Image (cartoon, rainbow over all chains, first blue to last red; front, top):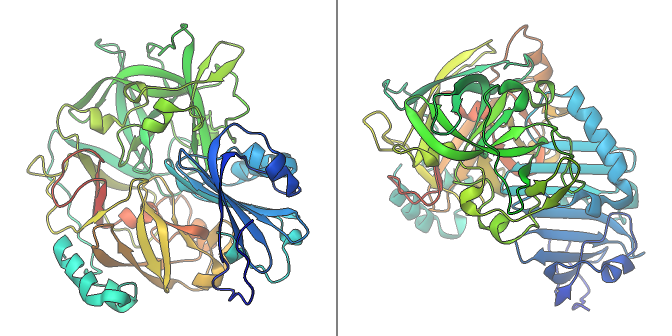
Length: 157
Length: 391
């Protein structure tokens, strides 16, 4: 449990945190919050829980430098995932049931654009953004239809 | 502006250090001169590339030899990339047979190397690499091919053809010596290195010395970084010739001159501030084919995915700031990408830009009309402690 306070300014959504050590893993987009605890991955990571008025963000920092935040709605559903780290995260694990949709959309897009730069996949009900460079990747994936009222895309950092 | 002046300025600015008024200490004017020719100078060219379809791609040729032999091949159409590390060549462009790196059990060592725009997959082999009169002896390179099955942990899309990669290879000459570093030597979680049989691959650790190496760092001389010199190009053009110079301050033709040093962090990033938005994941990358920054909501620039498409060209001003406190204003113009691409045969687009949330990616247009230095972490270089950029 994290600290929870009320009367939060939106510009300061992070109110408090708690660190949990041990076997934690990434829960995938669209899954239930219980999957975060239920996940039995073997990575050594610390977890913070950041609470805001409209969501809870579970921040998972692996010992080797990958930072993942999972945004959970009051209904307990992961509606967004963001990441930052020296290599690409396991997209299959992060996107879960949305992975195939993402993969197909990327394949189509990479054939349409001869580009070398950031990637944005916009699909019905799914947005995935990737950017950065080798040794420093950032990205986010979110479900626009599942965003709790009042949450802006810019909040998902 | 010298770095210590930048620090002084930062101190004077105090809490206002992030404001535009305080950040613009350095001249917005960029300095450019073509370097004197020498054994450390390699010709580079912006053109549509060997696939004939890449905007703002800068290419050169490299000579690859089986180690210690005169069995060599020169391959053109290789993308010059200051945003990655190591030489990667399409197997379809490589006719010279190179020795395969093997694991403890004799299996082939194979790499999955993700870029943002796609992943190169293929075996790690060793080669002598010659560029200009410089030579990197017996270093690991990646040969991009489908000779081994792609493991499920390796993210797509896999770019293993000329049509997919838009180049015959990628010459990664950025700020780090290896493409992964210590993380891959101690853990398999980065997901870069595998040992493979013809039917199955398994994640493996890979020692730092065995990893794919930045060829510049492996040169006998001029091995602390590079300088790219590409002239300005206000209008779309078919080709643009420039120079890639090896070494910083090691020869009479590669001194910093009046360039300001901006140091990067351990991930190869510095900070860019635009309209009060401070972007710490900011970098200079000749392998990005536009300037990618922020979103329409912040820039006010409409998009024509994946580019910006303002109805008329818009001036943009941003402040770059190094970890050493040096700061300077960079000005550029964003044109309508659809209009740019309507110019027949053009490959050089100095005003091509697009959105990207969370980063500020100074791609190839940043290099036009500038001398841009890229210093390699762990090496000594004038003007500051690498990794750094100077311009």
